[in-house]
Image (cartoon, rainbow, N blue to C red; front, side):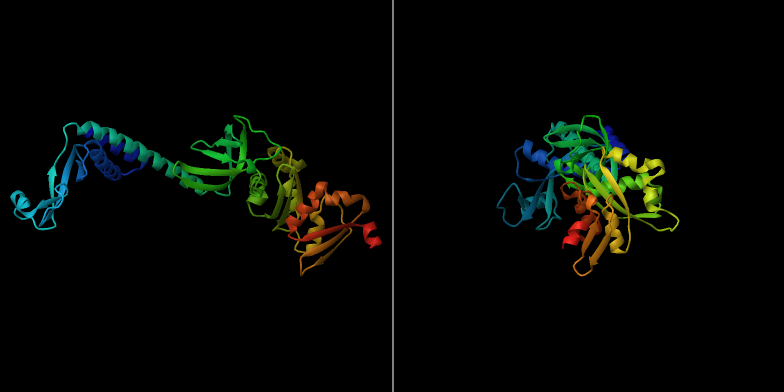
Length: 346
């Protein structure tokens, strides 16, 4: 190694922000292992890289003892005194043992260490960038699909869209651009692992924040979301200003805002419901698009009995009970739905 190598380390420090001293320390530590491996020795050694010239030196280290038991690791007081009369018991005696061809091994090892450290630093930068974006929305393109996993190219790294996080009504093809929700960012030995989702309710929340300025500005607040991905979502919204209609703001002019979200979700139906602190009102609204005749609530066990017109019973319950299930999840109440005829019979 030479001055060019030192200059290269200085350039890496400037470009990548990795300290030259940290790199040299790491190379010195790696060279100790290389020396022992290549020259078959178990003696203690120290490697030193000259900071200006890049010259590499290897020094054997022996401790001064009264009685030598291991000649590779220890030296007698008498021998040490011959080298320097100021030595005392317990001191370390160093002797240069740099092999003639060690420069080639040093250069090879240094390259491996530098490449590894640069990779680690770049992974660290990516991790720091994405750990701050957990619970956020991100756009990427499908890089590949393998064994049910969808790998999404985010530029600096890839995200993983697992089978349980994929929409049941979607096919993912190479090059498709899709928005996903960052569920978790994990640190692994292979770099940051970014887990994303298309089914998480948080995706709905973020999409509305992107499409509806009133939500982004805090004028309209999303109170709760219940979702069965790929099929239907219910979202409850409330306005902080009396002159702003929260449902109208989310629907947008001629329905454009909510339609953009429906298009992004490949046709998933979205019911936008006005939130109310009054549970009877909120529960009645949550069963939209069904009309509700009456609602009786029991505050103690958070149950509600809802009466709907006969012809709207199936609409209130929904296909396979979906509408009632989503309404219960949205409101946090257990809802018992009956038709007018059923109530009269009872």
